[in-house]
Image 1 (cartoon, rainbow, N blue to C red):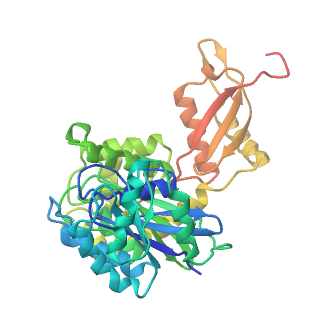
Image 2: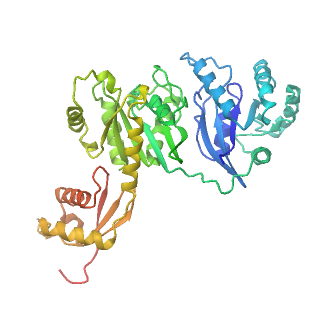
Length: 442
């Protein structure tokens, strides 16, 4: 059994994104006074009593997009309506009924004959505005429900009404097997790649830079298991950020990296590595994220360079990402995209392993026998034992007498030796040195 899907529909600037964020209890969609901020279908799982619902925010019907993406936005709205089990039609109580509201209502009336529709009069941010809710009876879509996304007034009542019109979901597993963030600079093919992974037109693909604004969670199934792939806005240099929308897009991308289990770092194989690519690589590396480097648009490279030579080029330009394996893809033809998913699964599985304390300390003993810690500034470093404290990424704590007695070079030796001995190649690991007094005097 699947989760019920609720499509949030309405004209621009009625507060659809704010309502989704209010339901979810976190900032999922970017909210801005500029009409047409939301372009893709942005979804979030919203639990309420015995129901977990997938709420889907959509672009505003009738929006005139400044980048001529109105037709693309309309297609995404149509997809949302087609896949919905309930329509939440949102209007603005402060504006009253507008001509565009009437057009939207006429469009939804036919669909409401097949599935339930609930009319929500949003922005009832003050008690004086409650009386304006009744005006929307004239749309002929049943009793309107007053709500304030900003203040939270009427939110629980509206969720209760929605939950009564869908099926209970107790026992349905909602946690995905893995969360995959697809990141990269602008126009490297992230949205095309996401659609290829999901095997459907789930996000807008356009040559217009900055088409994707939100971090869009796309749920899909592979081999009977559910995954979430996160499409993100293209990373750009700070001085290139023009407005608050682009700023929050960048914040959402960085947040997607943090909450992902595996990062797919897309590069345009037909172009040289840029400063933005390097900066993003540093961000991923510092976050110690399991990562697959994806050389996309390989078909445009023209066969001028071999895969081995390109891998060497990447390691020279981004040495901090040398641990990450590389996949060569052409997302527009879905070429090798499934191989990237398989590799991501394999890495995530390996990164989730834990080394037993006995095994780990046998490995440590062999490492120390091969290269004992040298003295530093007259201090002799001693290692007592090690333990793994977390997985994905694996984090090890090495207990020593004096952490400052260990040089960065020796710390790298310990980390690299652990990675090799415990089969964590291609996995970022962290090794922390902590002081512990010996039970014996030095």
